[in-house]
Image 1 (cartoon, rainbow, N blue to C red):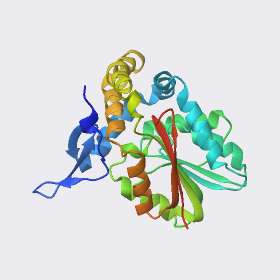
Image 2 (cartoon, one colour; image 1 turned 90 degrees about the horizontal axis):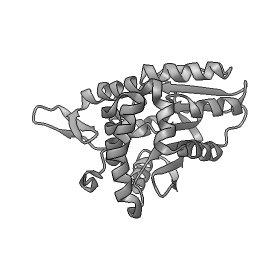
Image 3 (tube, rainbow, N blue to C red; image 1 turned 45 degrees about the horizontal axis):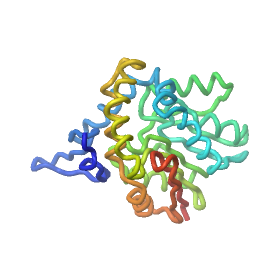
Image 4 (cartoon, rainbow, N blue to C red; image 1 turned 180 degrees about the vertical axis):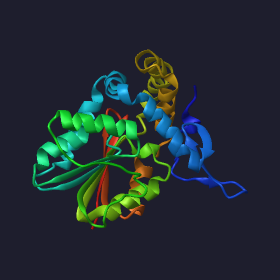
Length: 262
């Protein structure tokens, strides 16, 4: 499959003559008001096998990407932190251990099935921290509240990425930092084998392990439709963040963007 034609910025939406907005769901074009439910179906389906599939899909590399992110965030006792699209709560667990009882870590997700898995994992670790079902595009938090906002492998599934980034900026205090960990544009030398793996191997793994090949087909497509490193950097700057930079990992398979609210 030739995927280069699909490697475009999906942060914008279009409008038909009837005034209804459209956006991307993988390579498909859907009504804006349908994407949220379609993404929800994907994650309801994969929630119970999500961690196992992450290990299999990435060969365990996702743990190193998250470890790097946690070190860049450098959470300290007393910090107020918000983890968006928290999913199975890998980052929230690490943060809650670091900020201690004097700190505050909110684990939020728009998908109830994923959030339940994350909540149970937090409780299993003996961590009692607030968990909330929340849409990142309309956050239920006060302005200038958090020291750090993070989102790992969730931004690409959001319908209005610019709005979500503006909301992250709004809830951060001046001097607060944002961290966006996401799949990104791979180095050209790896493009062909990466495409073969994504569109031939990955869906088969999904079928064998999670009994769901379609969801993993979507996940592969959603990565290709996500803005590349430089485009996302500009989007973050447009949302109001300063000193935006990114770190490529595993030849660009994944990238960590970070910025500051002044």
